[in-house]
Image (cartoon, rainbow, N blue to C red):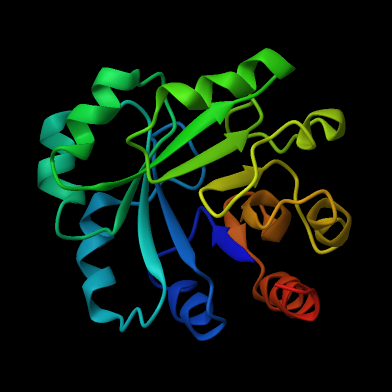
Length: 202
């Protein structure tokens, strides 16, 4: 079972997540988000021994200039959370980056969009809402492709990870459910979630 925690602060959250063996640590670069990080803080990430964790730059329709200046050399993955089409994803992939492509799912036919992005390393199925915590439709979870390449986001928490995992999902992306207030992670919630995750069969 793999875990990605998104919307982390480069100073206060990173070491905890590394110590808890969180697989993917997400940092948001989206000015409209309360979780947006100051680009100047990117250099702080190089001070950490990541061990087996990977750093992810979460972006929305990033420009080549932004990618070259800020992402390459600082992050292991770039997450594309905007309206990037197949050609754009391929272009970014050819820049030498590992890619997480987000597919926003409102109804069953939206799931099929993932087939367009064969160059993506990970497909993240999420709700259409941006920066708002809304649950992924339960009736559609069983329609998702299964495997290590496919992740699920949308109001996942300590309370429902067990039931969702029984539907075959083994890659979870969390953000707001691990916060004490908007944009501020709760370290106790993170610890409790990872403890619950570790109790489940991987």
